[in-house]
Figure 1 (tube, one colour):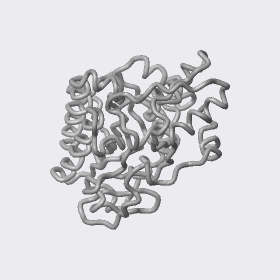
Figure 2 (cartoon, helix red, strand yellow):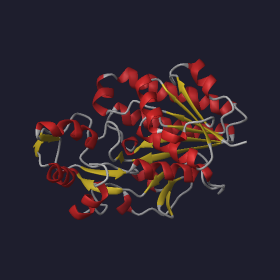
Figure 3 (cartoon, helix red, strand yellow):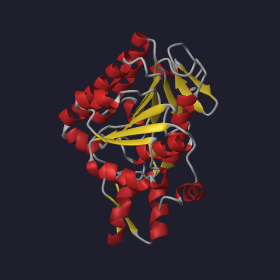
Figure 4 (cartoon, rainbow, N blue to C red):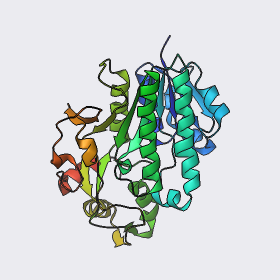
Length: 312
């Protein structure tokens, strides 16, 4: 009998995860509260539809829905969340209900179930020194995963990523909507962001899920080494490709100029493992150079052109 994985959220990452998991022989159950998201997800599955794929309409804010979707699950990958900084700042209680209380219910149910072997919480670099409700909610989610690992003895862990390149709701996705007007908007040219493709994110998550290394997990936070791209370069590459202009409109409240992967306190507990960072409980050997997108090497214009060519 194949192992069954629950993915909360049928967005870009949930879709890519399902594809890779199904291709690797797993059974997959996907849960989302949006009929439209589930319809798009199903359309993207192509020839992968079959008895190993379940698509469930349900909300992580609904305890009964969580209980139903957790039955006979061995691995949980929790991607579902409200993610837009501006919208969550304007509606903080909605963010709390979904990102904190919904995550809490999912974590508690996973702790109680004997079938669950590993729980992976998907976080963001905005959880480091959070200055908005979205980042704060993801930081609390990381704490919940660490706490659950300590309390249950099961394997709970978090993955902290940057921006998903080309995903639904991402900057390139927004620019695609604006393209027909002949102008794309840029909030702040000096912004630097960590970028990673959804396929790379999914591969990293599955790699941690499948790891037999007993040191992988334990409530720790895992961060892949990502690309650093400044927004002026990214917008210039896209504008040149599409033949449009770039209009600078200024950053929104709650946005940072530079993102941070780990804070000084976390650095005392961090270590480099292969091609990723691990924030654990014991003192590590992380160097100050690994702190922000400001000090990590940025991609050249040529590098950006090559990296984004399949999403623009």
